[in-house]
Image (cartoon, rainbow, N blue to C red; front, top):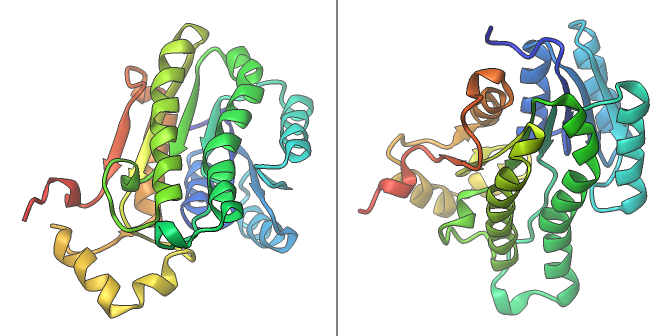
Length: 252
C-alpha cells in the first residue's frame, strides 16, 4: 500500500534540489508525473534519466510566476489526464541580503515567485484537484517561516505566508476532498545551497545548532513529501512538518 500507483502529480521546480528528489521518489513509487523547470536542457537531462528507468515523467518548460506558463501547465494536465491527484509547490527563489540592501525589484521578485505564484497555481488547479476527489497539495516552505535563520526578510515573509495559505486552504477545501500540508526544511544539500555550505564560517554555526550534526539530503525531504502525498496520510491536513534535524528545539 505504500506507493503512489495510478496517481497523477505535478511538481514545480522539479529539475534540481528538493524538487528533483521529489520527482525521483514519486516516480519510484509509481506516480505519473509532470514537472516544470525554466531551462529546456534541465528538463531533457532529467527526462532521459527517468526514461532509462522506465518511469512515467514528462517535463514542461514553464516559469511558475508567468501567467501564460501557469495556463500552459493547467492545459497540459487537463488534456493529458483530465484531473490531478497531487500538487507539489516547490518552485521558489531567494536573494540573500540585509533588509536595507534590497531593491524594490528584488524583494518583489522573491515574494511574487514564492508567495503569489503558489497561490495562483493552487487556485487554477483547484478544479482538477477537486475532480480527483482525493487529492493533496504539499507546499515546500522553510524553517525561515517561523524563525530567523539569516536567509533574508523577503524569503522569510513569503514562506510564512505560504504556511498560512496552507492552513486556510486546508480548511476551505477539505469538503472538496483536497488535503493541504507543508514541509519546512532546514539547510539541505542542493545546488542552491552548495556554495553557501562550503563556507566554513556559515557551515559551523548550522552544524553546532543542529542536534543531528549535519545538513539534510534532498531525498530526506522528498520522503516526507511522498508520505503526505500518499493515501496513508489521510487524516493529516493543514499541518507544517518541520524537518530540521532538531534545530528548532535546541535552545542552547
